[in-house]
Length: 245
Image (tube, one colour):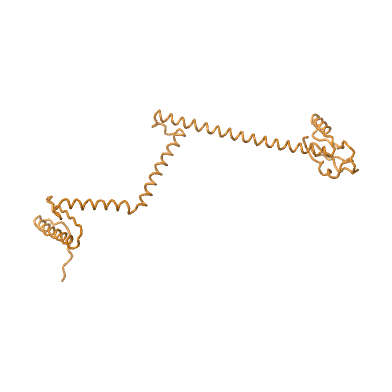
C-alpha cells in the first residue's frame, strides 16, 4: 500500500517543529547553492525562524541586497509595462471626471447656487464673469438687431427699384401717372377702397385697338368695361390691384 497524502499544517510540538525546521532549512540552503553553482543563476535566499534567527544564501549581505534591488527594479518595470494602456485610460478617466465635477460646480455658481463656501475673492471673480457674459449677450443682441434693420433697408431699396421700373414701364406706354396718383389720393381720402379708372395715354397710339379691361386700384369690384385705346401688349398687365405709384 502506498503512503497516504500528508496534510500540511502547523506542528504543534515545539521540539518536532524545531527539528523539522532545521532539516528543511538546510535542505533549502543546499538546493539554493546547487542551483547557483550548477546553473550559474543569481539566487538569494532569506529565512527567519520563529525565534527571529536569520539564515541566508549567499552569506554575503551585499549580494543579497544587490539581488533584491534587481528584483525590485524588475517588479516596477513589469508593473509599468504589463498594462500601460489600462493605466493610461484610468488616468484619462480620472482627469475627465475631475474636470466634469469642476464644470458642474462652476455652472451651479453661475446659477447662484452653492455660494456658501465661496470667499470674497471668489465671489468677485464670479461677479466679473457674469458681467462679462451679460455684456457679450447684449453685444450679440445689438448685432442681430442691426443685421435685421439692414435686411429691411435692403428690401425697401429693392421695392423702390421695382416701383421705379414700374413707373418707367407705364410711362413708356404713355399713361398719365400724375392723374392716377391724384385719383388714388382722392379715393383714399373719401374712404372708397376702389374705383374704376379708364387709362388714357397722353399721346395718340398709332394702333387703334380695343381695350379689354380697366386699371383697378383698391378692392376688386365688378365693373362694366368701357372701351379704351390700349395696346394689346398692355391688355393683360393693367388689371391689377393696389399698385403704389
